[in-house]
Length: 203
Image 1 (cartoon, rainbow, N blue to C red):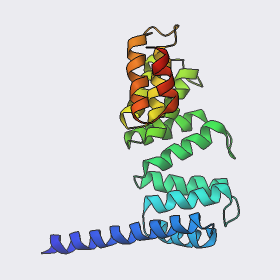
Image 2 (cartoon, one colour):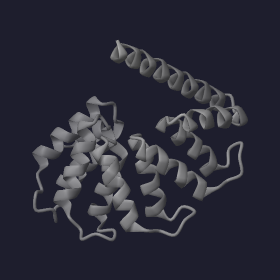
Image 3 (cartoon, rainbow, N blue to C red):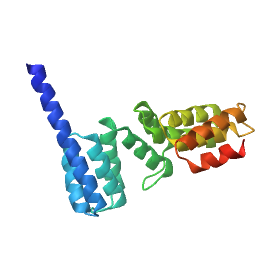
Image 4 (cartoon, helix red, strand yellow):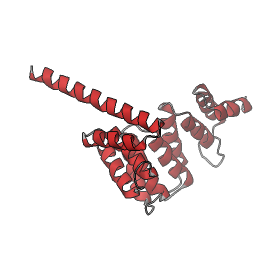
């Protein structure tokens, strides 16, 4: 009986969080950022990682609130810790680019890795790009393509294109046109116009 009551309570709480997120996103579409801030703040305070994520976005962009990058990072950190993997990617991106904070590649890699563990496609893409460019890491095409392919497997067409591009890089030891073609086709099937163009060029 206790388990049944607990299950009902958890389901009720999840529905409340979902409603708050929906209301906040609607307010954003209507450019009612003050209402969005209030709704997302309530959701975040209740422990919903997604609410903290969207609230952080408002602070990062200065939408309806005073722009505050440190506050945004703090909220993204809370969301990341609460299991919302997209927030891990957002923090990683700030640290990688130095977008309002001092660039810190070590922290960027740390948060991208945490995002990847949570199944976030953007984290795979961003860390893959760092390996591809050799950005604060030793250039490693193999690790880059593995991460891009993981992004592709998560349904992100750009990840398929990036992986294909790596296979088309002649200085890559795994240079393979046939594999590249397969990945361009997959990106095309996912609706990526560039992927369709490259696939046709290779046929």
